[in-house]
Image (cartoon, rainbow, N blue to C red; front, side, top):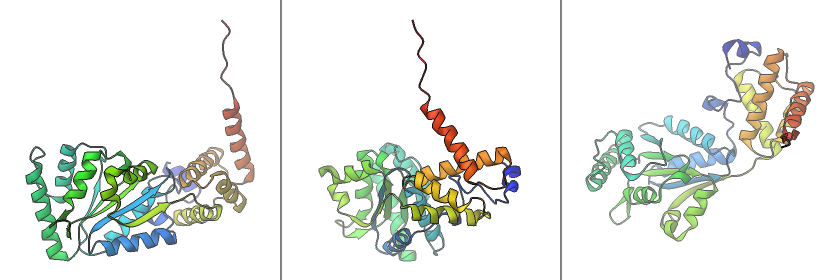
Amino acid sequence: MNKKLLALYGLKWNPFAPGVPVEALHVTARVESFCWRVRQLTGEGGFALVTGAPGTGKSAALRILAASLAMQRDVKLGVISRPQANIADFYREMGDLFGVELHPHNRWAGAKVLRQRWQAYIDATLSRPLLIVDEAQEIQSAVLAELRLLSSAELDSHILLTVVLAGDGRLADRLRSDEFLPLDSRMRVRLAMERATPQDLQDCLRHALQQAGAPALMTGEVIAALCDHAQGNLRTLMIMADELLAAAAQREARQIDETLFFEVCAAATAGDSKAPIRRRR
C-alpha cells in the first residue's frame, strides 16, 4: 500500500499486511507464557514446539519470541531460512548462522566445530544459542535426526542448543511416529495454536488498528462481522480486512462501515457463485 493511501487514513503502516512491525502483533497470555518459558529454557537447552493449523498465528508467535529474546543480553539467535534443505545445505546454513566454516562433505568435522562454538558461547554467557525453525513440517527426516543428535553431547546429558520447531499438523503427526519418538520425548515446552474465538479476533484486530494509528478506521459492527466470518483463523481475518481497506481506498471512503462491508461481501459472494460456462459442441 503506497504512502498516499496510508495518508488517506492516517496509517503508519498497513495493519493487515503480513510484515507489520512486531509491536502490531497482539500478544495473548498463552503466547506470552510460551515466550517466558523459552527464555528460561535457554539456560539449560532443549527443544520447544509450536503447532497449529495454517493461519492460526504460529509464525507471529515466533516473531514475538524473537523480539523478546532480542531484548536479552548476549542472546545468539539463528533462524533457519530453508527448512526443506538436505543435510549438506543444512550444514552450510548452520555454519553461516553461527559464524564457522563448515565442509558439508565432512559432517563429523562440521559437528565438532559447531559444538565447540556452542560450548564457547555457553562458557561465556551461561546460556545456550537458540535456533528457530519455522515450517518445520518440511524438514527432511535425516536433517531432523541430525539436529537432535547435534544439539547434545556427553551421552545426551549436556545440551548445547535450544531449538524451537514450528509447524502444522504434519509435524505433529511425524513426531508421534515411532521414528521420531526420541525427539518428541525431548520437547520441554509446547504451544498448540488453536482457532481463535471471535472475541480473541476482535482484540487482535483492534490492537492492529490502534498500533497502526487509526483505531476508528472500522466501525464496531464491521469488526464484529469480520471476526464472525473469519471462523477463528487470523490469516483469513487479515486477508478480508485488507480487501476491505483496498475497497475503501478505491472509493476514498472516510471509514470502513457496514455499507462497504456488505458491498464487498456481496461482490465476493456473487463471484464465487458464478459457475463456469460450458460451450456446446
